[in-house]
Amino acid sequence: MKRNRITFKVFYITTLLLVASALIIYLTLYFLLPSYYYNHKEATLHEGVNTLIEKIEPLTFTEAEPLLGDFVHEYNVHLIIQNRAGFIIYFPTNMDQKLNGEMNRGRNHVPFRQQVNRRFIEEELTRSEVISISELVKFKNDLQQYQINVVAPLQPIDEASKVILMFLPYMTIAIIIISIIGAYLYSNIISKPLLKLNRTAKQMAQLDFSSKSEIASNDELGELSSNLNKLAKNLKINMDELQEANDQLKDDIQKEREQEEKRREFMATVSHELKTPITAVSGQLEGMIHQIGAYKDRDKYLQQSYEIMKDMERLVYEILDVSQLESFDFSPQIKTINLSNLLEKTVGNFLYFRDLKMLEFVTEIERELYIEADEKLMTKAIANVISNAVKYSGEGEKVFISLKNRDNVSELRVLNTGAHIDEKELQKIFQPFYRVEKSRNRKTGGSGLGLYIVKKILDIHQAEYSVTNDQKGVLFLIKF
Image 1 (tube, one colour):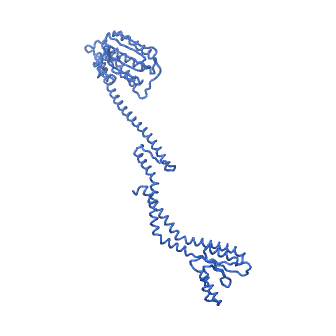
Image 2 (cartoon, rainbow, N blue to C red; image 1 turned 135 degrees about the vertical axis):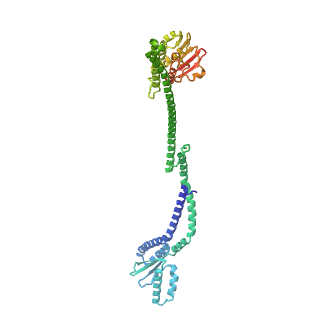
Image 3 (cartoon, rainbow, N blue to C red; image 1 turned 60 degrees about the vertical axis):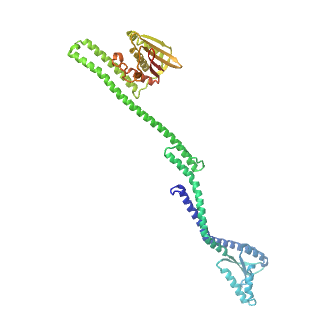
C-alpha cells in the first residue's frame, strides 16, 4: 500500500483514531470509574437511608426490624443502630458472631461492653474501603433518639480497577488488532469509489472520454460521479466541436493558401497577357509617329492597334468578372428565372457569327423551364459556352443546342460537330488562360478566361457540368 495513496492515509488515520479511542475509554474506566462509582453509591445510600428513616419513624422498633433487614439485603450494607450511650441495639446477621464474640469476653462488665461497641463502630466507620453514613432516628412510643450507621464496602470496585489495569497489555494487543482490521475494511470501503473517480479523472485529463464513472450511490460521491460524467460528456462535445472547427480552419487556411497561389499565378498570367498587346500597340504607334517603313500606312496600323485595344478591353472586362466572382464578399442575386427564354435570347445574339462562319444551329428548347439563379451570371455562362462552340467549329459545321427536363433536372446540351479535344486537354480547359489552340491567336482562341468564368459561375450555382468528346464532336453538358 503506497503511502501517498488515500487508502493508506485513511487506513493510518483510522487505525490511530481507533487505538487512541479504545485506550482513552479503557484508561477512563480505570481512573474515573471508582470515583464515579463512589459518588453514585454515596448518593444512592443517602437517598436510601432518608427513605428508610421516613418509613421506620412512624413504627416501633419491633415493627421496623423487617424493614431494616430488607434495606441491608437490598443495598448490601452493614446497618448498625445504637443508643445515646453508644450501645448497639441492632446489627445485621452477618455481624452477629463477630460482635457477640467481643462482648462475651466482657459480658458482666458494662464499661467493657461500651468500649467494645464504640471500638467496633469506630473501626467500621473509619475503614478506607467503605462508605459510612450516620443519621438520627426516633421510633414510635420511644422518647430516646438513636443513631443509625450504614456502612457500604467498596472493595469489589477497587479490585475491579486493579484487574482492569492488569488486563491492559492484553487488551492493548486486542485493540490494535481489531483497529487494524477495522481500519483496513473502512479505508477500502471509503477509498474504493474515490479511486474509481480518480481513474476516470485521469482518463479525462488525457482527453479520453470513453469510460464513465459507475458510482450510483445517493450521497456526495454519487453526485460527484454524476457530475464527472456530465463534465466528460460536455468536454467531449466541446472537444469534438473544437476539432471540427480546427479541421475546418486548417481546410480554410489550406484553401486560402491555394487561392493565394492561384491568385499570384493569375496575376502573373494577366501581366503576361497584357504585356504582349501593349508592346505591340506601342511599337506600331512609335513606327507611325516616326513614319518608319510600312508604318507610314497609318490607316492600316491604326485599325490593327484599335483591334488590339478592343481585345485588351474585353480581356480587362473578363479579368474584372473573375475578380468579382472570386471576391470574399460576392453574393449572387438569386431569383427564379425562365431558363428557356434566357437560352433563346442568348442563342439569338450569335446569329451574326453563325452566318459569318456559315454554321447551322439546331435548337430544341423545352418551354417554361425555370431555375433559381443569378440571371446576369447565368446569361454570361451560357453565352461563353455557345461562344466556345462557335469559335471551335469549322465552316459549314453544326451546333446542336437542346434544353430538356429530365427527372426534374433541367439539362442543357451544347454540341459542336467536327471538333475534338485531346483527353489530356479536357482536364485543363477550365484553368484560367488555358487555350487548346496553341497559337494564342485571340481571333481564333480567345483570352482563355471564358471557360474559367463558366466554371466559377456554375460552381456558385452548384450546377453539375462536364465537357466530353462525342462521336459527332465536343459536348458541353450542364445540369441545373
